[in-house]
Image 1 (tube, helix red, strand yellow):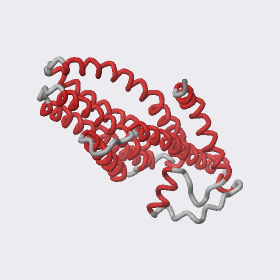
Image 2 (cartoon, helix red, strand yellow):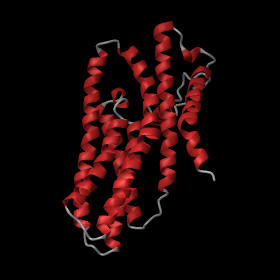
Image 3 (cartoon, one colour):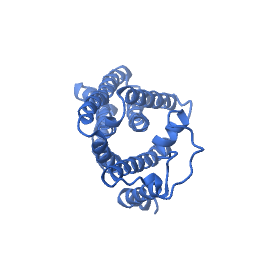
Length: 275
């Protein structure tokens, strides 16, 4: 649920930024194309919601098959894969999608400013929004295997409602929402989520193959944390990877993962942000 919430919040914020840009141009230039833009956006949003929902459904059915074939072993491997895959698609593949979309977005803006609103532009807006839904489905494809359908659906719904609220308020100029800071925050959360996945996956594999319990290697006393069944315990475990049976070994795994992701993806962005 938490992973789906973070990713859907991030992607749907981009959806409402796109919608806001088109509505802003139409309103500023008095083109009176708001109805067409809203209709195209509504179609795109519906499809964007259906795409990840379909992915969640497939993931839930896959759980039944996985449970028949040594689920713990497969879950360990898939957890590790998910930890690295989610970082790759967000920091590398997502940048490719954004760059490609930006070129088409410029062309669409030019058409709209020339008061040209044909069916191709209508479908372009729909396509821009559907692409965000496709990214959500892609980014959550592996993580949905470890969550219930209803949990994934709840994360998607909360992320959509939160992003739509901020998007609408920003467009109406009620608040100035720091979109850049939100994207940066979601990046950090995704890195921590990936570290938690890898830590959990390696913990299971070490236990299965070598009967080594990483929780017993230099244990760290976190008994003050609530049980994972509580809301705070759920957040601590699923966002920050913290649990009562934490240890220095688990902390080392998470730290090495974060260092790897930083060297592979984030160091270039940090260097480019400085003159």
